[in-house]
Image (cartoon, rainbow, N blue to C red; front, side, top):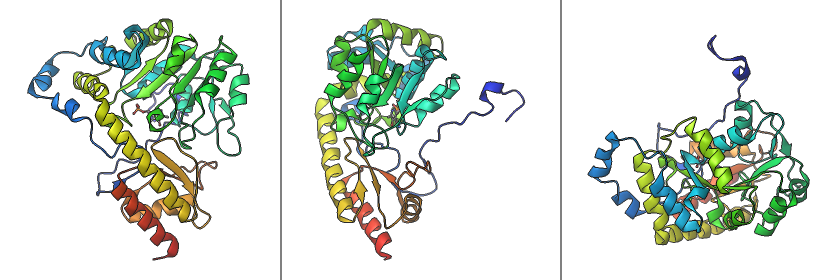
Length: 354
Ligand code: PMP
Protein backbone atom coordinates (compact mmCIF):
# COMPACT_ATOMS: atom_id res chain seq x y z
CA UNK A 1 0.00 0.00 0.00
CA UNK A 2 1.33 3.46 -0.82
CA UNK A 3 1.21 6.34 1.64
CA UNK A 4 -1.23 8.10 -0.69
CA UNK A 5 -4.13 5.66 -0.48
CA UNK A 6 -7.10 7.27 1.26
CA UNK A 7 -8.05 5.92 4.71
CA UNK A 8 -11.41 4.58 3.52
CA UNK A 9 -9.59 2.20 1.14
CA UNK A 10 -6.90 1.03 3.53
CA UNK A 11 -8.78 -2.16 4.33
CA UNK A 12 -10.34 -2.66 0.89
CA UNK A 13 -10.89 -6.36 0.22
CA UNK A 14 -10.96 -6.49 -3.59
CA UNK A 15 -12.88 -9.05 -5.64
CA UNK A 16 -10.71 -11.99 -6.67
CA UNK A 17 -11.61 -13.07 -10.21
CA UNK A 18 -11.29 -16.72 -11.26
CA UNK A 19 -7.87 -17.68 -12.58
CA UNK A 20 -7.04 -16.84 -16.20
CA UNK A 21 -3.87 -18.94 -16.37
CA UNK A 22 -1.28 -18.41 -19.13
CA UNK A 23 1.15 -21.14 -18.06
CA UNK A 24 -0.49 -24.14 -19.72
CA UNK A 25 -3.66 -25.09 -21.54
CA UNK A 26 -6.45 -26.13 -19.22
CA UNK A 27 -9.96 -27.33 -19.78
CA UNK A 28 -11.26 -24.10 -18.36
CA UNK A 29 -14.42 -24.54 -16.31
CA UNK A 30 -13.83 -21.85 -13.69
CA UNK A 31 -15.30 -18.53 -14.82
CA UNK A 32 -18.63 -19.41 -16.45
CA UNK A 33 -17.53 -18.46 -19.96
CA UNK A 34 -19.18 -20.07 -22.98
CA UNK A 35 -17.35 -22.97 -24.64
CA UNK A 36 -18.66 -21.72 -28.00
CA UNK A 37 -17.40 -18.76 -30.06
CA UNK A 38 -19.47 -15.59 -30.56
CA UNK A 39 -21.98 -15.27 -33.41
CA UNK A 40 -20.16 -15.60 -36.78
CA UNK A 41 -22.15 -12.56 -38.00
CA UNK A 42 -20.75 -10.54 -35.12
CA UNK A 43 -17.21 -11.73 -35.79
CA UNK A 44 -17.56 -10.94 -39.53
CA UNK A 45 -18.53 -7.35 -38.67
CA UNK A 46 -15.07 -6.73 -37.21
CA UNK A 47 -13.48 -6.02 -40.58
CA UNK A 48 -10.65 -3.67 -41.50
CA UNK A 49 -12.99 -0.67 -41.63
CA UNK A 50 -14.20 -1.41 -38.13
CA UNK A 51 -10.63 -1.54 -36.84
CA UNK A 52 -9.62 1.60 -38.75
CA UNK A 53 -12.61 3.31 -37.18
CA UNK A 54 -10.87 3.02 -33.82
CA UNK A 55 -9.21 6.38 -34.43
CA UNK A 56 -12.58 7.86 -33.45
CA UNK A 57 -14.10 7.77 -29.98
CA UNK A 58 -17.01 5.44 -29.48
CA UNK A 59 -20.57 6.79 -29.36
CA UNK A 60 -21.12 7.90 -25.74
CA UNK A 61 -24.84 7.11 -26.14
CA UNK A 62 -24.00 3.67 -27.64
CA UNK A 63 -27.04 4.14 -29.89
CA UNK A 64 -26.48 1.13 -32.17
CA UNK A 65 -26.29 -1.54 -29.50
CA UNK A 66 -28.82 0.20 -27.24
CA UNK A 67 -31.37 0.18 -30.09
CA UNK A 68 -30.64 -3.49 -30.86
CA UNK A 69 -31.19 -4.45 -27.19
CA UNK A 70 -34.34 -2.30 -26.96
CA UNK A 71 -35.78 -3.95 -30.09
CA UNK A 72 -34.93 -7.42 -28.81
CA UNK A 73 -36.78 -6.82 -25.54
CA UNK A 74 -39.57 -4.59 -26.89
CA UNK A 75 -38.64 -1.58 -24.72
CA UNK A 76 -37.63 1.99 -25.57
CA UNK A 77 -33.97 2.91 -26.10
CA UNK A 78 -34.34 5.38 -23.23
CA UNK A 79 -35.06 2.41 -20.96
CA UNK A 80 -31.67 0.77 -21.66
CA UNK A 81 -28.12 1.59 -20.54
CA UNK A 82 -25.06 -0.37 -21.68
CA UNK A 83 -21.79 -0.75 -19.84
CA UNK A 84 -18.32 -2.23 -19.90
CA UNK A 85 -19.59 -5.60 -18.72
CA UNK A 86 -22.49 -5.86 -16.32
CA UNK A 87 -19.91 -5.33 -13.55
CA UNK A 88 -19.76 -1.70 -14.60
CA UNK A 89 -23.56 -1.45 -14.65
CA UNK A 90 -23.63 -2.90 -11.12
CA UNK A 91 -21.02 -0.35 -10.05
CA UNK A 92 -23.24 2.43 -11.47
CA UNK A 93 -26.20 0.99 -9.52
CA UNK A 94 -24.26 1.04 -6.25
CA UNK A 95 -22.93 4.54 -6.93
CA UNK A 96 -26.34 5.93 -7.90
CA UNK A 97 -28.61 4.34 -5.35
CA UNK A 98 -26.63 3.40 -2.22
CA UNK A 99 -25.46 5.30 0.77
CA UNK A 100 -25.65 4.95 4.54
CA UNK A 101 -29.36 5.70 4.50
CA UNK A 102 -30.18 3.60 1.42
CA UNK A 103 -28.65 0.20 1.98
CA UNK A 104 -28.75 -2.56 -0.62
CA UNK A 105 -29.31 -6.03 0.85
CA UNK A 106 -28.02 -9.09 -1.04
CA UNK A 107 -28.15 -12.87 -0.50
CA UNK A 108 -25.59 -14.36 1.88
CA UNK A 109 -24.24 -16.53 -0.95
CA UNK A 110 -24.27 -14.73 -4.29
CA UNK A 111 -22.03 -12.80 -6.65
CA UNK A 112 -18.91 -11.86 -4.68
CA UNK A 113 -18.80 -8.46 -6.29
CA UNK A 114 -21.89 -7.08 -4.49
CA UNK A 115 -20.19 -6.55 -1.10
CA UNK A 116 -17.07 -5.28 -2.87
CA UNK A 117 -19.00 -2.54 -4.67
CA UNK A 118 -20.65 -1.66 -1.37
CA UNK A 119 -17.30 -1.38 0.36
CA UNK A 120 -15.85 0.71 -2.46
CA UNK A 121 -18.49 3.36 -2.02
CA UNK A 122 -18.40 3.08 1.75
CA UNK A 123 -21.66 1.22 2.38
CA UNK A 124 -21.71 -1.65 4.84
CA UNK A 125 -22.40 -5.06 3.35
CA UNK A 126 -25.82 -6.29 4.44
CA UNK A 127 -26.91 -9.87 3.73
CA UNK A 128 -30.07 -12.00 3.82
CA UNK A 129 -29.49 -15.68 4.64
CA UNK A 130 -30.40 -18.35 2.09
CA UNK A 131 -32.78 -21.16 3.05
CA UNK A 132 -31.34 -24.52 4.18
CA UNK A 133 -31.61 -25.92 0.64
CA UNK A 134 -29.53 -22.96 -0.64
CA UNK A 135 -32.50 -21.35 -2.39
CA UNK A 136 -33.32 -17.66 -2.04
CA UNK A 137 -35.54 -16.87 0.93
CA UNK A 138 -38.24 -15.08 -1.06
CA UNK A 139 -40.28 -14.10 2.02
CA UNK A 140 -37.22 -12.50 3.62
CA UNK A 141 -36.70 -10.44 0.45
CA UNK A 142 -40.41 -9.54 0.35
CA UNK A 143 -40.22 -8.32 3.95
CA UNK A 144 -36.84 -6.57 3.73
CA UNK A 145 -37.39 -2.84 4.29
CA UNK A 146 -34.34 -1.82 2.26
CA UNK A 147 -33.36 -1.84 -1.39
CA UNK A 148 -32.40 -5.35 -2.51
CA UNK A 149 -30.18 -6.96 -5.14
CA UNK A 150 -30.08 -10.64 -6.08
CA UNK A 151 -29.00 -12.74 -9.00
CA UNK A 152 -31.62 -14.92 -10.70
CA UNK A 153 -30.47 -17.65 -11.17
CA UNK A 154 -28.35 -16.99 -8.11
CA UNK A 155 -24.59 -16.91 -8.48
CA UNK A 156 -22.60 -19.82 -7.09
CA UNK A 157 -25.74 -21.94 -6.47
CA UNK A 158 -27.41 -21.65 -9.90
CA UNK A 159 -30.80 -21.92 -8.21
CA UNK A 160 -33.54 -19.74 -9.76
CA UNK A 161 -36.75 -18.32 -8.36
CA UNK A 162 -39.94 -18.04 -10.45
CA UNK A 163 -41.07 -14.85 -12.15
CA UNK A 164 -44.09 -14.85 -9.82
CA UNK A 165 -41.71 -14.75 -6.84
CA UNK A 166 -39.66 -11.95 -8.42
CA UNK A 167 -42.90 -10.00 -8.88
CA UNK A 168 -43.87 -10.69 -5.28
CA UNK A 169 -40.58 -9.10 -4.16
CA UNK A 170 -40.89 -6.13 -6.53
CA UNK A 171 -44.54 -5.40 -5.79
CA UNK A 172 -44.31 -5.84 -2.00
CA UNK A 173 -42.81 -2.39 -1.44
CA UNK A 174 -42.76 -0.14 -4.45
CA UNK A 175 -40.90 2.54 -2.49
CA UNK A 176 -37.74 0.47 -2.51
CA UNK A 177 -35.50 -0.54 -5.38
CA UNK A 178 -35.17 -4.16 -6.56
CA UNK A 179 -32.16 -5.04 -8.73
CA UNK A 180 -32.33 -8.41 -10.47
CA UNK A 181 -29.00 -9.55 -11.89
CA UNK A 182 -29.87 -11.88 -14.77
CA UNK A 183 -26.33 -12.77 -15.86
CA UNK A 184 -27.38 -16.45 -16.21
CA UNK A 185 -31.08 -16.08 -17.06
CA UNK A 186 -30.82 -17.49 -20.60
CA UNK A 187 -29.96 -20.97 -19.34
CA UNK A 188 -33.43 -21.76 -18.06
CA UNK A 189 -34.83 -19.09 -15.72
CA UNK A 190 -37.58 -16.54 -16.46
CA UNK A 191 -36.53 -12.98 -17.17
CA UNK A 192 -38.14 -10.11 -15.29
CA UNK A 193 -37.58 -7.62 -18.15
CA UNK A 194 -41.34 -7.51 -18.88
CA UNK A 195 -41.99 -6.41 -15.28
CA UNK A 196 -40.03 -3.20 -15.92
CA UNK A 197 -43.09 -2.09 -17.97
CA UNK A 198 -45.22 -2.38 -14.85
CA UNK A 199 -42.93 -1.35 -11.97
CA UNK A 200 -40.73 1.72 -11.76
CA UNK A 201 -38.74 0.31 -8.81
CA UNK A 202 -37.16 -2.56 -10.79
CA UNK A 203 -33.78 -2.72 -12.56
CA UNK A 204 -32.92 -5.82 -14.59
CA UNK A 205 -29.22 -6.29 -15.36
CA UNK A 206 -27.95 -8.65 -18.05
CA UNK A 207 -24.67 -9.48 -19.78
CA UNK A 208 -23.31 -10.59 -23.15
CA UNK A 209 -20.56 -12.54 -21.34
CA UNK A 210 -22.33 -15.87 -20.88
CA UNK A 211 -25.09 -16.87 -23.31
CA UNK A 212 -23.73 -14.63 -26.08
CA UNK A 213 -20.09 -15.74 -25.77
CA UNK A 214 -18.66 -12.21 -25.49
CA UNK A 215 -17.01 -12.21 -22.05
CA UNK A 216 -13.80 -10.72 -23.46
CA UNK A 217 -15.63 -7.91 -25.26
CA UNK A 218 -17.05 -6.61 -21.96
CA UNK A 219 -20.68 -5.70 -22.58
CA UNK A 220 -23.57 -5.60 -20.13
CA UNK A 221 -26.79 -3.64 -19.83
CA UNK A 222 -29.69 -2.68 -17.62
CA UNK A 223 -33.36 -2.24 -18.46
CA UNK A 224 -35.55 -0.11 -16.21
CA UNK A 225 -37.84 2.92 -16.20
CA UNK A 226 -36.60 6.02 -18.04
CA UNK A 227 -36.07 7.79 -14.72
CA UNK A 228 -33.84 5.04 -13.30
CA UNK A 229 -31.87 4.76 -16.54
CA UNK A 230 -31.36 8.48 -16.60
CA UNK A 231 -29.93 8.33 -13.03
CA UNK A 232 -27.55 5.56 -14.10
CA UNK A 233 -26.52 7.58 -17.15
CA UNK A 234 -25.76 10.56 -14.94
CA UNK A 235 -23.27 8.36 -13.05
CA UNK A 236 -21.82 6.95 -16.26
CA UNK A 237 -21.29 10.39 -17.79
CA UNK A 238 -19.61 11.48 -14.55
CA UNK A 239 -17.24 8.53 -14.67
CA UNK A 240 -16.47 7.33 -18.23
CA UNK A 241 -18.63 8.63 -21.09
CA UNK A 242 -16.96 6.33 -23.67
CA UNK A 243 -17.38 3.22 -21.56
CA UNK A 244 -18.17 0.81 -24.41
CA UNK A 245 -15.58 0.63 -27.18
CA UNK A 246 -16.49 0.75 -30.87
CA UNK A 247 -15.68 -2.88 -31.64
CA UNK A 248 -17.71 -4.14 -28.69
CA UNK A 249 -20.69 -2.03 -29.70
CA UNK A 250 -20.59 -3.53 -33.21
CA UNK A 251 -20.19 -7.08 -31.86
CA UNK A 252 -23.03 -6.65 -29.39
CA UNK A 253 -25.52 -5.24 -31.91
CA UNK A 254 -24.85 -8.12 -34.32
CA UNK A 255 -24.81 -10.78 -31.61
CA UNK A 256 -28.20 -9.89 -30.16
CA UNK A 257 -29.79 -10.00 -33.62
CA UNK A 258 -28.36 -13.47 -34.33
CA UNK A 259 -31.12 -15.33 -32.53
CA UNK A 260 -30.36 -18.65 -34.19
CA UNK A 261 -26.75 -18.82 -32.95
CA UNK A 262 -27.90 -17.84 -29.47
CA UNK A 263 -30.63 -20.51 -29.37
CA UNK A 264 -28.42 -23.32 -30.64
CA UNK A 265 -25.65 -22.60 -28.14
CA UNK A 266 -27.80 -22.05 -25.10
CA UNK A 267 -29.70 -25.28 -25.79
CA UNK A 268 -26.41 -27.19 -26.13
CA UNK A 269 -25.27 -25.77 -22.77
CA UNK A 270 -28.56 -26.69 -21.08
CA UNK A 271 -28.40 -30.28 -22.37
CA UNK A 272 -24.71 -30.62 -21.41
CA UNK A 273 -25.63 -29.32 -17.95
CA UNK A 274 -28.23 -32.07 -17.66
CA UNK A 275 -25.68 -34.69 -18.72
CA UNK A 276 -23.10 -33.38 -16.22
CA UNK A 277 -25.65 -33.14 -13.41
CA UNK A 278 -26.65 -36.80 -13.86
CA UNK A 279 -23.03 -37.97 -14.22
CA UNK A 280 -21.99 -36.18 -11.00
CA UNK A 281 -24.97 -37.63 -9.15
CA UNK A 282 -23.96 -41.09 -10.38
CA UNK A 283 -20.56 -40.47 -8.79
CA UNK A 284 -22.29 -39.74 -5.47
CA UNK A 285 -22.12 -35.94 -5.61
CA UNK A 286 -24.76 -33.65 -4.19
CA UNK A 287 -25.46 -31.19 -7.01
CA UNK A 288 -27.63 -28.10 -6.55
CA UNK A 289 -30.49 -27.76 -9.10
CA UNK A 290 -28.92 -25.18 -11.39
CA UNK A 291 -30.63 -23.11 -14.08
CA UNK A 292 -27.29 -21.48 -14.96
CA UNK A 293 -24.25 -22.49 -17.05
CA UNK A 294 -22.52 -23.97 -14.00
CA UNK A 295 -23.10 -26.53 -11.27
CA UNK A 296 -22.23 -26.31 -7.60
CA UNK A 297 -21.37 -29.78 -6.38
CA UNK A 298 -19.91 -31.52 -3.34
CA UNK A 299 -19.03 -35.05 -2.36
CA UNK A 300 -18.49 -36.59 1.04
CA UNK A 301 -15.61 -38.56 -0.54
CA UNK A 302 -13.44 -35.48 -1.18
CA UNK A 303 -13.39 -31.84 0.04
CA UNK A 304 -13.80 -28.89 -2.31
CA UNK A 305 -10.21 -27.66 -2.17
CA UNK A 306 -8.73 -31.12 -2.58
CA UNK A 307 -10.87 -31.82 -5.62
CA UNK A 308 -10.07 -28.42 -7.15
CA UNK A 309 -6.31 -29.00 -6.71
CA UNK A 310 -6.43 -32.58 -7.99
CA UNK A 311 -8.37 -31.52 -11.08
CA UNK A 312 -5.99 -28.62 -11.70
CA UNK A 313 -3.06 -31.03 -11.58
CA UNK A 314 -4.83 -33.04 -14.30
CA UNK A 315 -5.42 -29.96 -16.47
CA UNK A 316 -9.03 -29.20 -15.55
CA UNK A 317 -9.74 -25.87 -13.89
CA UNK A 318 -12.85 -25.49 -11.74
CA UNK A 319 -13.68 -22.80 -9.15
CA UNK A 320 -13.12 -23.25 -5.45
CA UNK A 321 -14.35 -20.76 -2.85
CA UNK A 322 -12.67 -20.82 0.54
CA UNK A 323 -15.55 -19.08 2.37
CA UNK A 324 -16.98 -21.44 5.04
CA UNK A 325 -20.42 -21.61 3.40
CA UNK A 326 -18.96 -22.87 0.12
CA UNK A 327 -15.71 -24.60 1.00
CA UNK A 328 -17.14 -28.14 0.64
CA UNK A 329 -18.13 -27.40 -2.95
CA UNK A 330 -16.56 -26.84 -6.33
CA UNK A 331 -18.30 -24.74 -8.97
CA UNK A 332 -18.06 -26.24 -12.42
CA UNK A 333 -18.79 -24.22 -15.56
CA UNK A 334 -20.59 -26.14 -18.28
CA UNK A 335 -18.18 -26.55 -21.18
CA UNK A 336 -18.62 -28.62 -24.34
CA UNK A 337 -19.90 -32.19 -24.01
CA UNK A 338 -16.37 -33.44 -24.74
CA UNK A 339 -14.86 -31.27 -21.98
CA UNK A 340 -17.45 -32.48 -19.50
CA UNK A 341 -16.78 -36.12 -20.39
CA UNK A 342 -13.11 -35.53 -19.58
CA UNK A 343 -14.07 -33.80 -16.32
CA UNK A 344 -16.25 -36.72 -15.27
CA UNK A 345 -13.52 -39.26 -16.13
CA UNK A 346 -10.93 -37.28 -14.14
CA UNK A 347 -13.24 -36.94 -11.13
CA UNK A 348 -13.96 -40.67 -11.24
CA UNK A 349 -10.20 -41.41 -11.31
CA UNK A 350 -9.54 -38.97 -8.46
CA UNK A 351 -12.16 -40.41 -6.14
CA UNK A 352 -11.28 -44.02 -6.92
CA UNK A 353 -7.55 -43.28 -6.52
CA UNK A 354 -6.77 -44.27 -10.12
N1 PMP B 1 -23.36 -10.90 -12.28
C1 PMP B 1 -23.09 -12.17 -11.98
C2 PMP B 1 -24.06 -12.91 -11.12
C3 PMP B 1 -21.92 -12.79 -12.44
O1 PMP B 1 -21.64 -14.03 -12.11
C4 PMP B 1 -21.05 -12.03 -13.28
C5 PMP B 1 -19.80 -12.63 -13.87
N2 PMP B 1 -18.99 -13.31 -13.13
C6 PMP B 1 -21.37 -10.72 -13.54
C7 PMP B 1 -22.55 -10.17 -13.05
C8 PMP B 1 -20.46 -9.83 -14.33
O2 PMP B 1 -20.39 -10.21 -15.65
P1 PMP B 1 -19.79 -9.25 -16.77
O3 PMP B 1 -19.14 -8.09 -16.11
O4 PMP B 1 -18.86 -10.11 -17.53
O5 PMP B 1 -20.98 -8.82 -17.58
